[in-house]
Length: 363
Image (cartoon, rainbow, N blue to C red; front, side):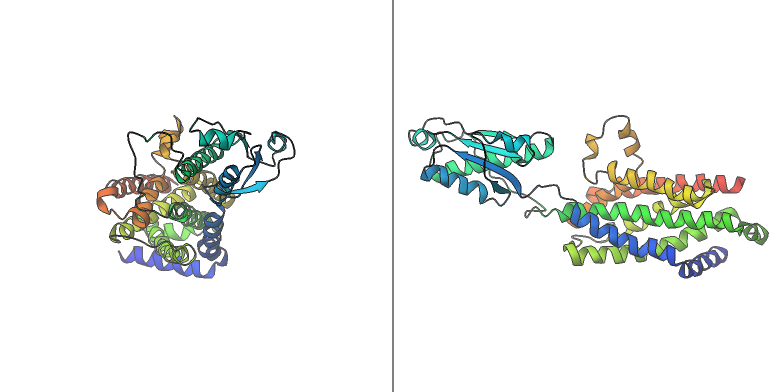
């Protein structure tokens, strides 16, 4: 144990003298947090919308006011009869055409068709626009008393956990997983490659220290550094985005420490198998970062990942940590919801450490 602690202290002293490593651990993660937290938006706003009102009645004008009262659309003036030129030129994402007999048909309690043209280039945005306009139209009809037939089933919708639909509660916990997997792994990989490039591994072999003691010393040092990075990162998330833990904090604390071990040992694995710093950096960024963003459920559900990429998603550590952070910052269910996360992370930790030890012992 004394040997491991001595190796850990040595790594911490080297880290303190390395300004590049300090920037990788503290500065770049904060920049990534700010960029991801403010730039990623799942709900579109200020959608350019053109309306052609051929009825021009108080009722049709009231409907138009209701559409723009949602603050989701911004008005555009249609330049042609049907306004489709704005869609063709990409200036508008939707066009609403109100027929001449709009108010008269409504007052007669007859079915009246409003034509809506939506740019379907982006399927997700088109679906959001369609659902928003449908809900707005339904609300307008009920408000004006034009609900022709009462439905047999009347749903009362209640949003749990995030009633205000704050996007930060979905994005920020995911950013924690992406950042805390990428940057601790990156700095650990570079530290391991630096040992090879500077030839200091000769001193290790002459000291009589075993391979597992050497590796565990590095892991302990960079896990401690990563814990400091985590405190700083989550503190920034609380200040900038008002994202605070809810419920029992112990699943988050224990799960975070285990996840940081996975991240550091992954960087150790990359460093052991890499011979140059550039190779190590590219390996971490191309495998760790990309997998954490696209195969973890950070933006899109894991269930939507097609086979065979769905198999790779099962071994992406960030996937399980995102489940943990979204429970800790949104649901607050605790161990009941994430009981499988820590055992899986521990298995990943053990597997990657064994591979690192096996390769390092053979070199």
